Length: 296
Image (cartoon, rainbow, N blue to C red; front, side, top):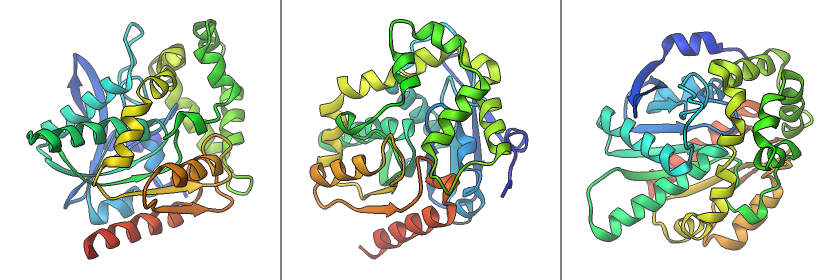
């Protein structure tokens, strides 16, 4: 199901300026704004299997975070979740969207938690800004205590991280990606090649040790980011591939323990990338969620 190759994705995309850096984003459809936030270490192309369907119902925007995909990847830059949230807010301001829905995955989940915290602050203090109407999370490290990082992630975070970044090759990346997909929903060889090309675009492998710092931030801001999930009035659904060794069953269990009235959809046999491994099931769960919001 190769609907859009990365090259076609790039050719259809647009760019905007963020702090003098070139940021890529994809845009399609009409209606209410749905912003799709991708994970680590991949890109907005992760949404390619669900893109056409999502754009039938929404004005969909999918950016590549700075340091990822087709966006600029500056070598000397302080990458952070807070900065990525600033980037998303600027993009929404430029596009003049004040009311948004969010569909997020992995790293994008954490950026969304910060956006939710800011939304909650604005509501509390009656300030103007972006209103978040709903959030749908896919597999990600919503709770650092339940997250189980891969060995390569731990190595990138360590004191030798800058050297580990330089030695990441296509074989190592594809092996690690295959490990986090479901046994019966593996990526194709073509998809794996595309993932690798997106990561290496603009010398992306050289900054892996900087991008991975978001895992430290999850601990540092744990109270703020988990607290906003517990207190926010925004409708939230968590769609989770249970076979994911990083944030599968373990994350669902913790979500049910911590979040009041949890809305969870469990996908049996699916790993870390529901939008790629089970696009129809993911779309069904998302659409049902949106219908439930309309009824309420």
